[in-house]
Length: 410
Image (cartoon, rainbow, N blue to C red; front, side):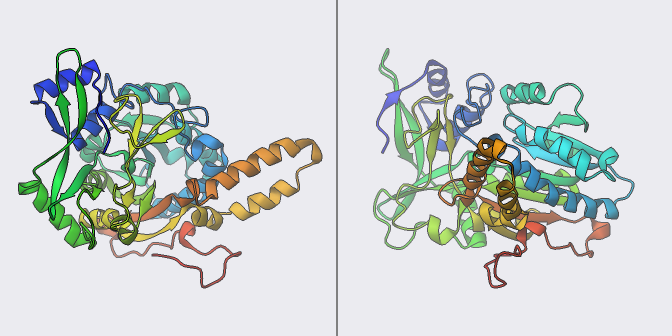
């Protein structure tokens, strides 16, 4: 268990007003999304190789250049079904705005027939990050951009592709602790001794409506929590925020595709007696730590998703699941191998560039790093087109270099 840590002044006031104890999920929400003090809300975190943590788009343009071909396929399909409507590319939780900035010129070039119908929609709940995105994208991007919320989109649902890239694993999670054969809700408790206020993890009741929701999620997804053989103190996460997010995302889309890219495990790997402390981690200045209470408001906090739970939450809220793959497999299906081959033909004068790009491509597919990200594809049909089949997504097909028997979890 994390030891006591000093409580920052802004959090001390909140905890006192809340009676000295809050659920871990509330602490995580405040620490990440408070508009004045939160790591994302106030824009304290930076994303990139020299920032607090790196994402695939932050390593260079190859990720966007591979992804865009799949986006163009989806947009072309939607454009045929809706020839008179605007088509949107929605980036939910856009971080620094890097992915959208990279996609805009690519979409102008590779989706020329649709370019005048396109707009880019950035959904950002944190004002600190939104200001940086606007600075990154500039005043007059080649494709119109607008900032909004899922709540606002519910009033005027759009047609398009929604990308949730490393978003859902940063939604607040409930932490559950096993004691005497019963699950308890993990809390953050204040030890207020005048000038020496500290916070630590504690345990509280896990009953009522919240427990009923948890049991329903387990029944829908097939999660067994706690698993057989789990010992006292066994701790894990329950992603209670995913289903409401899927509901809001579905309400924002009249017809379209949802691509979730995030760290995730299958339930039988996630909820085992051997994974006795879940997956929760904090990141700051490229260093990962289990000390999630320290530096509240200045470090990222994240937990892996459960694949089956995400799929069940999506289907419950009107999305149709097509399939999923690890990032390495998805990028190979989108043409990554050809990029490696092309690097070999660069002239000797560009050797340094070729080696740098090769290193970036390897990081994108390294199973010990970004290559283990999961790409999950969902569709939402309008009533008028609900009987029309979708063409199988390119990222879920086997690339020519792989054997016909390669696994595919659609």
